[in-house]
Length: 253
Image 1 (cartoon, rainbow, N blue to C red):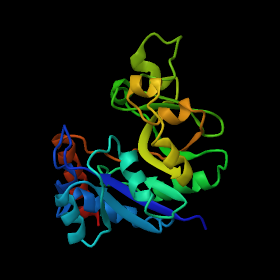
Image 2 (image 1 turned 90 degrees about the vertical axis):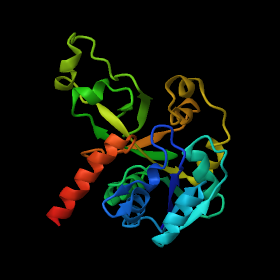
Image 3 (image 1 turned 135 degrees about the horizontal axis):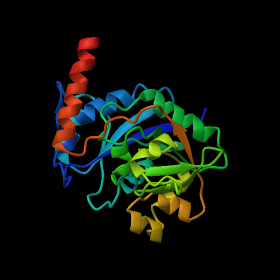
Image 4 (image 1 turned 60 degrees about the vertical axis):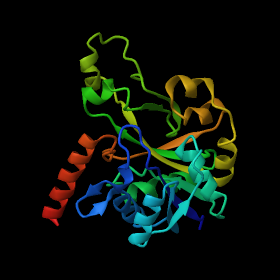
């Protein structure tokens, strides 16, 4: 069996939401929710939090999780997980977003399995159907178009594909299928180590989307599809929504 490690990059100094990984949802900090759900994935032999802040380190150790201190000068989460991956021998490196407290363990397994089954690809990721016009027009919701073999053709903050013959943009969801990119990546170890050394590409700089660096260099990203994207916590308002979801799930169970 191919070995896989899940790494959760977690930094304290978020511009829009400082201290986000330690924000409480119910009786646990957000990073604990992410960690515990990730450990339920069948294909992950190990899960570790990668942080540059002692407060996060202490919080993870307090609930018994694996945690590693990393350098403070990393530009991206990919750079941070690469530092941790260098210290391990796992064949697949899974970048798990630290701000998705309800990440689905089955979605993790599905994305890992897809890369295992796609020898021509170097990275797999997740996509979900866009269901509202608000999300379609929101540049923070990254769109992706895919080919017949589930490979990503392009990622953009713009609406893609563009429906030329329908003038009313608010009706586009009735005429075409649009997908949003969900920020989960599974890397083959060797490509991750190369990728973080490449300079930023032109498209990556323009869109501010680091996954475009792989496409610009001619590598394939395959996309596993899920029905619904998990909530991502970017702001205190998102945290309130997550708290409501947590309370609803607790009542159900």
